[in-house]
Image (cartoon, rainbow, N blue to C red; front, side, top):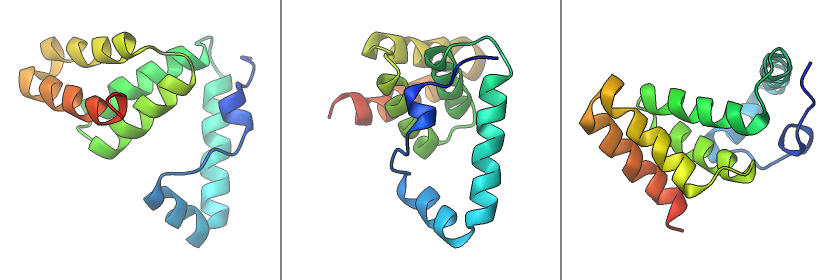
Length: 113
C-alpha cells in the first residue's frame, strides 16, 4: 500500500463548485473522498505519477476545470511545467491536435500565473 502524501493528508481548499457540492452533500463528499484515498493506496504509483495520470485523464475528457485542478495539484506534488506540458503534447497522437492545443491553453492558465 502506497503511503499517503502531504496533499492527501491535508485539507486543501476545494475548487469552488466542488466546495459547494461538499457543503451541500457532506456524506456523499466524505464517501467520495474516502474512495479516492483507497484508490490511491491500491497501487504502486507515486503521488506525482498519479497526478500526471489524472491530468491526462482530465485532458482526455476535455474538462477545462479538471485540467486546471489537476495541473495545480501536479505542481504541488513536484511536477515541473515541462512535465505538465509534455502530458499535453502526448495527447496529440491519441486525441488530436485541437485537444492538445486546448490542453496547452488550459495548463497555461495555471502555469502562467
